[in-house]
Length: 257
Image (cartoon, one colour):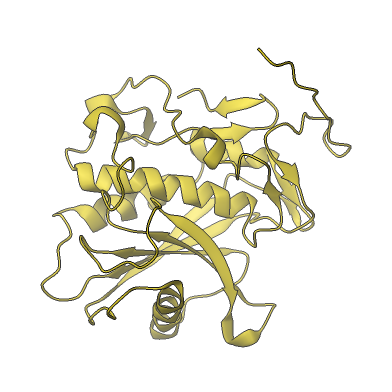
């Protein structure tokens, strides 16, 4: 066993093993929006959109979102406050290969079509259908940000959630599916992971370390399933399986699901 030296943060007097603060902003509270890019003839399981929407309606005030409240930025402290702002579906065809640039174009299109707000208080999640032509694979999901129209005061903070199963290892552990919909339950794992990293590192300049961001460090940590169908998290009576998130205060993965 290797003994590690623990460095303490001057702001919180908490250990900084795992991730460190790099000076950027966090998302104090959030309103999230779902964008379903599913051209005619492509596949999403029945109930897929409903369950992803429901999770984002439930997650504010939950134990998993609450882990984020120990993270701070130059603009304040994360609050356990998140609401769902709406969904939008686009049936237009994919390009030959879906790139990050094409995802940003699609997100910009959705924002304009719905008049959605942008900035540090908003989160946009974009989903593609099964077997979508995604370029540069090797990931379960990711998050990033761009400036809307070049205006730095208007960052668009987004997460890309490909259809579950796009890459081996993205499915729920042991095929656990508390909502009897393994596609949606698998995508909720990626959604929750990216959401908590967006909260704590929205512009990629706040909280991260050698092991990655607060979701990356705990990527295979699910705790002990206890609820309906193997759920490890119950919110308002709704069952989910999500991975744990890195806690600086506990120096480990939390919330001990």
